[in-house]
Length: 395
Length: 134
Image (cartoon, rainbow over all chains, first blue to last red; front, side, top):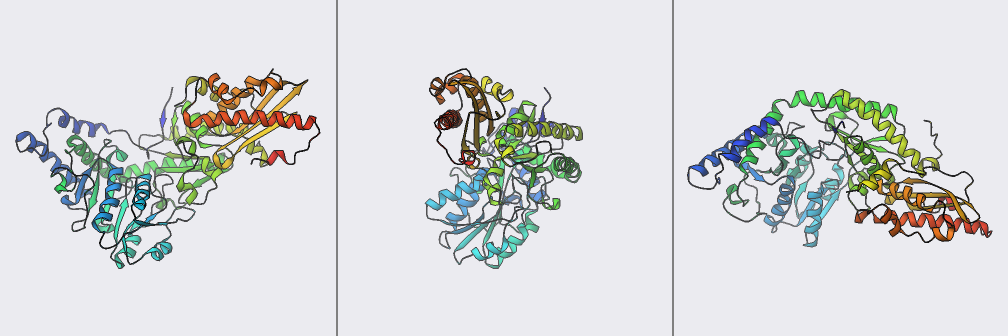
């Protein structure tokens, strides 16, 4: 069966060139980067080179890049580390209400430990409410965190403006750039953030490796206690092949980013245009101004039907997508992001995220739209809501 | 996560639709939870001669609707009332734990449709059954 992958926001394939760059660090240069002998020094050299390269590509100093196991650890660390280190200064944190679960569930846990959180709302396109943010600032606010680009609806948040507001009050800013890195030219120096999370597997790097950028001079406590790795701020034997692959993936991504983004956006634009024209009762969620939206993202609500059944129907035709429906997660609650932008629960349940990648083709886009049309029509035929609304079935 | 039998029932569901001038209609669930199941019955001499469904819901909801309607066609209403969600799950050779509620909805929809038939038969008027659960 033909298979088409449209879930690049979940993860991407490993670039073959990255894989080849990593191979010797599994097989030959297997030393522990912390060992003092030659094996260790060879591994350390590779880690240093990777760190230098990543730092340069995002406008940081090498000693501001801390390797982690991925985006979730970086987010956990940023939040818990700052809260712990700044305990004396205050215990209030401001985050957006559309953060990834890596942030939100950490926040929920910290709340139980007595940390206070303000959750800032977003408008119907998913942009954070800057006025609400300003009003939420208190004398004991220690950190503001807002994701750079949303994983579900692709909206790119005004991080520079958030930094400007925070700096007036001497508050630290963290951003979860897991989705943004590789799709936007992320530069920590021009952005002015104090911390930034990112992860390799979102841009054709390996899974299980990421980083937290921590600006020099920022007070941070450890999340993972252990040896002297990562300037004693993060214990654990360095994942040498992982960080080598991470650096190479970022280098290759940045090298062809302009060209790739233009291509991927073309695929996405055609998809959006055809879906909006050819399938009735749909709504594109997220930023309408595509310059403020991830080039790979198209997130659609299909009225009268449920997302998981769309997902599995497409899956049976070899098309891989993601759903904002609760049914995929096992809870009865639909996506918090979709509810935050004002969708009804019913519409949120019928939402599918399509995320394109440079391996996709225009022909695939057309095939997916054609398949989607019949899938949606078939499921609506089965839906008691479609009749109830008195809509013309032949539309 | 779903077994072959569930996927097959989802892929090629039986008894999709709505019986015109049905003798019994049951509709359960609500859109905010992501499941609405509607079952319509054609009943002659207390025997279910036809059953159709319309479902808003996940793959498991559609599969259980198809299976449950299939199971009750040809049964007397007394026999149909004995169809439990457990029997629906058994016929499907299992559902993931978080999807068991779909089979419960199927059982409830059958019961609601039969109750509607009995109410009509006994001349009991229930207002607005159509929208009751939505």
